[in-house]
Image 1 (cartoon, one colour):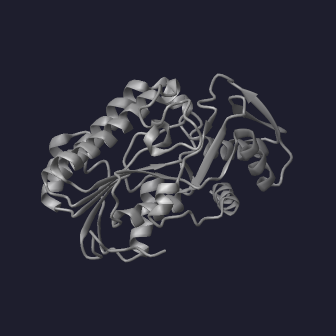
Image 2 (cartoon, helix red, strand yellow):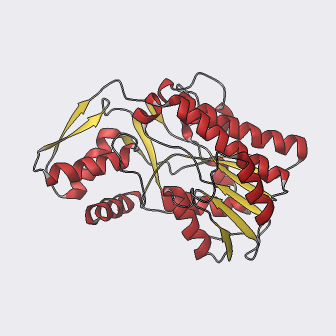
Image 3 (tube, helix red, strand yellow):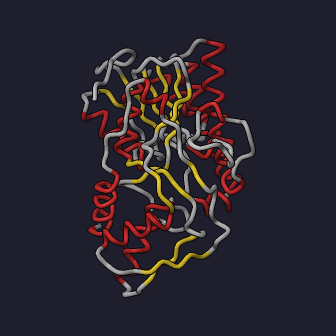
Amino acid sequence: MDYPLRYIKKNDKIFLAGHNGLVGSAVLNKLNEVGFKKVITCNRKKLNLLDQNKVNKFISLNKPKGLIICAAKVGGVNANKNNKADFIYENMTIQNNLINAAFKYNVKRLVFLGSSCIYPANSKQPIKESYLLTGPLEETNDAYAIAKISGIKYCQSLNEQYKTNYICLMPTNIFGKNDNYNLQSSHFIPALIRKIHTAIKKKKNFIEVWGTGKPKREIMHVDDLANAIVYFLNKKTKESLINIGTGYEKTINEYAKMLINISGHNLKIKNIKKDLNGVERKLLDIKLAKKYGWISDENILNKLKETYHSYNKS
């Protein structure tokens, strides 16, 4: 894929916040792969993103030309439902500190990552960017969604008022290397992989899947998202909010069956905690991203196999 160098050159400094996470680590690999030579990273011990003074000092000293915000407090439906205060406070604080510092110290280009949960629970499908704030949110993760919406609106407001050039990318459900496999806080793909691995190890003939298994989810490999982030880092767009997805959609139980087949074992599915469904369907309209020349180029089935076997070997 062609990566136009409209805003950030290969020798410009880019601060990548959240480089150790699932998305951040993939973005770091992609930036290095395409030849960006001055990518700045800093771990949590050296830079607490919840501390505004420390963030301001870091940005003012390093003077990055670009800032990519992959840092966030994330988790699955159960973690979001049970830790709403933590999710809304930490995410709003982290993103506000970074976006404000970027504006204050003249960072030329900022990429902010949101989530498809920002859209109303009963959105028409596929979900267009224009559906933002047109209806009630899904209650199980509304705190996280509100935090992300506030980040989008902050970026949009800066663009409108001060003519900054900040872009917000809204990805669908992400999976891949370096994911979180903690069953209490993970998203559904890593949770399914761990449950299948554990069942095989303990010689059980079933796995337990939260919810009814009927809700549909669009998924995307993290390398695809990293590709999109680096692409839009330098792409001129009229809009400041753009959906990033694949159009690949199945039910939770269908994904479970796919991963069971990948494992090579015969396991049954038992659906439990049937109130933990989340929204019934969440498919993003990606026409806008395609209009600007970006399309998904990863094979989902191959990437599911790769991710499963990578976990199995760990």
